[in-house]
Image 1 (cartoon, rainbow, N blue to C red):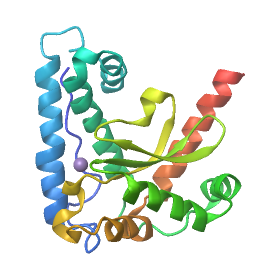
Image 2: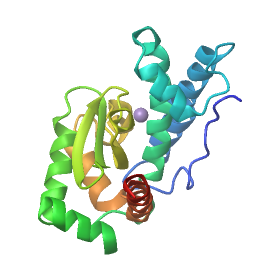
Image 3: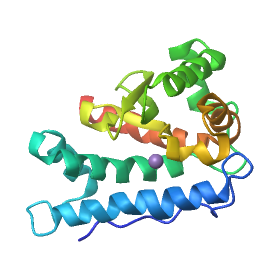
Length: 208
Ligand code: MN3
């Protein structure tokens, strides 16, 4: 079964003024779709053709000959996760379990925010900033290019795409302004909470 391009979880213009409709349309309909199409082209007629996307990512990550497949498949996953990491009217401070976990592991929301912003702005070149769950605690990390935390055994909770195509039309070279808009106005904390609850549930099952 081919990999499919998921619809956006909101209208293309719903993240304005923090992310323009043009940016979202180009990013989803051209970049994200491009990764889907390339992944399908690379798995067609191979043993991976009927695998789930995460399985394709895990297997190609271990095989240096499949770097192109890994890059495209991981970018499909990363972008779907990125769209879900944002919501109209999002950003600011989380509540509930996520707020408690951030307090516990970063010593407060401001420290988390600074850490995530530094990871996103400090990533040289193209890549991703992440909030992840390592099995017991939350961590902020960043990855270059298409790389992503799942292959290292970490559970992503939130991601920000810091490739230039994510922000150049709206913020030009000012990545820090884009990252601030992402944190203050776009983060979907309900999605983060659902990812954390799921990851904690799986951890409890595996250690029971
Ligand atoms: Mn992108």
